[in-house]
Amino acid sequence: MDFPVPENEVERLAAVQAYQVYGTGPESGFDDLTDLAASIANVPIAIVNIVGDTKIWLKSRHGVPPDLEEVPRGGVCCSHAVCRSDLLVVSDTHADDRFRAMPFIATEPFLRFYAGMPLIDSGGRALGTLCIMDITPRELTFEAAEGIRRIARQTTAQLELRLKIAQLVRSQEELAAEKQRSDSLLLNILPRNIAAELTEKGSVEPRHHPSATILFTDFVDFTKSAAELSPRELVDDLDMYFSEFDNIVARHGLEKLKTMGDSYMCAGGLMQGRKDHAVRSCLAALEMRRFVAASDRRLAAIGQRPWHLRVGLHSGSMMSGVVGRKKFSYDVWGDAVNIASRMESTDEADHVNISESTFQHVKSYFDCTPRGSLEVRSKGKMTMYFLDRLKPEYSADAAGVEANERLRSTLAGTSAPWSLH
Image (cartoon, rainbow, N blue to C red; front, side):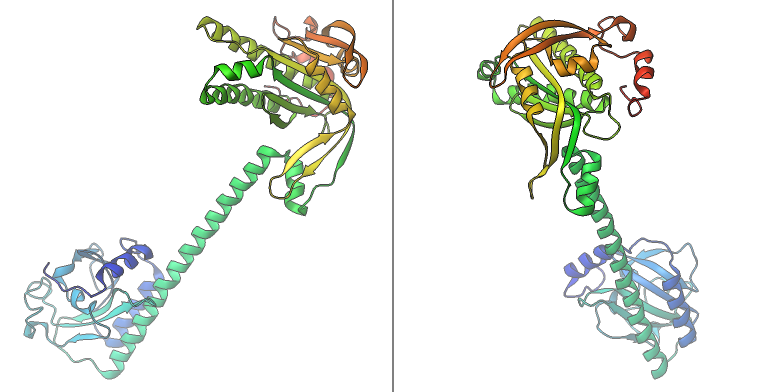
C-alpha cells in the first residue's frame, strides 16, 4: 500500500459505502461549493473528493478536465489529508518529500500548491476532502484557510443531507411497498369494499342481505384419503383444488369466505349489484365439479385415488360482518348458511345439490333433476334438486358449464357487468 490510511479505515470505508456517493455524477450543490472555494482562495483548481478503498472519485471539480473523474488513491495529496482532522497545507509540493514524485506534481500540470480539508461527518469518519491547488507555490492566508474550513463543513453537511434524503426516499418506498403488501393481504381475506371500509374506519358495519347464495363444497371420504397420503401430498392436493376454486370464484364475481379442512365456502350476492347471485353461484359450482372430475381422470390414469366432490347451494337472507382484532375474518351468519351446509352434506358424490329456493332463482337457465323431499338434520324434510347443466340455449359448450352471450345479455340488466372469463 503506497499511501497512509486513517486509524478508523474500516469504519470510514463502510461510511463511504453507506453514503452511496462514490461514482455518482455532478450535482449543482457540490459544484457551487467548489466554485466558491476557488474564488475565496483565488486558485485555479478546487475539488470535492470522495476517498474510496484504492481510488478517489472527483465528485465536483473546478478547473479540472471533465473527463478526469477518478484517480489512484496513492497518487494524490488527498490520501494524506484524509488521515487528518484539520486542514493540510503544502505551500510547495516540490519541496515536500511526500509529494514531489506524485503524478500531476512531477508531471503536467506540475502542481506546486495544495491545501486539503477532510470532510469529517458526524460519526468522525473522513469521507473525502475539499482541496484547492495551484501551479505556483504560495501561502494560504488565515482568512482563506478559515473559508476553506467552512466550505468543507458545508460540503459535509451537503453529503449528510443527501444521505438523509436518500434514506427518507427509501423509507417512503419501503412504507409504500409494505402498505401494498398489507393491502394485498387484506384483499386476500376480505372483499374489496369491506377491506376499504376497514382501512378507512377501523371497523366494518355489519350488513343484512335479503337475498344471497351460499356455496359449500367438501370431498367424499376425505378422512380416508387423508390417511393414505403424506402430509405434503395432502396439502399439495388441497392447495391445487382450492387455488383453482379461488380462480373460479373470482371469475364469477363471488366472494370466498373460508376453507375448513376439506370444505370450501363462498357466497354470491354479498356485494352490491349482484342480483344474479344464484346463477353465478351455480355456474361456479358446475365449473368446480368439472375441474375436480378432470383431475380425477388424471389421477385414475396413473393409479392414484381420485377425489370426489360434493357441492351444496342455498339462497336466502343472511348477515355478514368482520370479526377479530388481530386476525380478521369476514363471515356470514343466518339460517341460510346452515341450510346451504345441509345441501352439501346431503349431496351425492360428483353432484351439485341445490335447495328449492336456489332452484326457483335458476330454473329458467339450468336443467335440474328433482330429488324430492329428503330428511335434513334439524330441518325436517326439504325439497332438493341436482343441478345438472345449463340449458342448451344458454350454454357456450356441449357440457353446459359455460354461459353464452345470450345468458349474459339476459342477465345484464339485473346485475353488475359480466366478467366470467
